[in-house]
Structures are given as structure tokens and as C-alpha cells.
Length: 167
Image 1 (cartoon, rainbow, N blue to C red):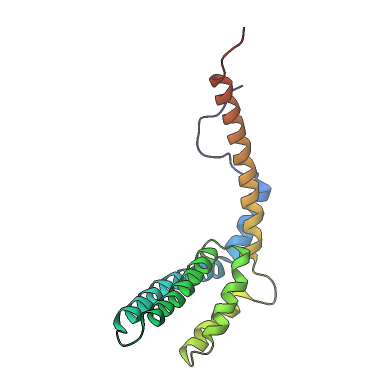
Image 2: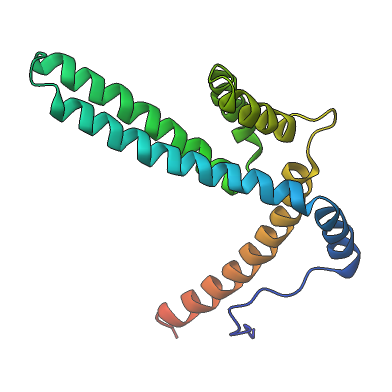
């Protein structure tokens, strides 16, 4: 049993690759915009967490429990934004709903927040589901199956060398 020592998985079949790539290229600007929204959520989380720390440290006239509660709310909201931002950056389908909730909250920030979050909702929820969330899953699951097959072959060959021979 020979195992290929190359860490690069074999190329996908041309029919699957060409179909997935043509769909991806057709929607590449939407995909890049959605990933940049994820980056904006990550930046917003950092700014929000910093703002919460500043508020908690500067409010000496308020009780400690109020300052700690304020900090906790800001940190939890920032953690939620980080979770959604990473999901959007990786184009995970589950991230559309939480980012829609965050964008709906952001619509109340008249006038700039309304424009930006309206555009975010337009990107995430068009009439049809965005193909960047669908086709990427199919191609990545095929790559994952190919990689798992190679890892299984590698682990079997390593186990055959590690077990002592009982002759």
C-alpha cells in the first residue's frame, strides 16, 4: 500500500470544479461584500468591547455591580458580533439569521445606520438564497471527503508500522 506523501489534496474533477467555479465567479462581488461585512462585525466587536471597558472604568460614581453589569452586556454583545462576523467571513449559512438580527437592530441608527444595514439586509436576503452560501458547501464537502480518505489511508499505513509483528 503506497501513500502519496504530498500534503496537497488531489484536484477536483473538472465537471464539478468548473460548475462551482463559474457560479462562484458570477457572484464573487457579493461574496466579497458579505465577507467584508463579517470583518466590519469583528471591528465593531472590538470597538464595542473597548467602549464597555471605558464605561466600566470611568463610572466611579456608580456602584460596582452596575459597572460590572454594563461591562458584561458589552462583552456579551461583542462576543455575539465576533461569532457572527467569523461565520460571515467563512460564508457559513447559519450566519445569515444572526446577522439579519444585528442588521435589524442597526436599522434604528438613522440615517447612516439605516443605509448601511439596509444594504447588509439586501446582500444577505435577496429573492433567491445567495449562491455563495450554497455552492461553497457542496465543493467543500467533496474536498473534505477526499481529505478524509487520504487521512484514513495515512493513519492505516502508520498503524501498520507501529504494531509489532506477531510471527
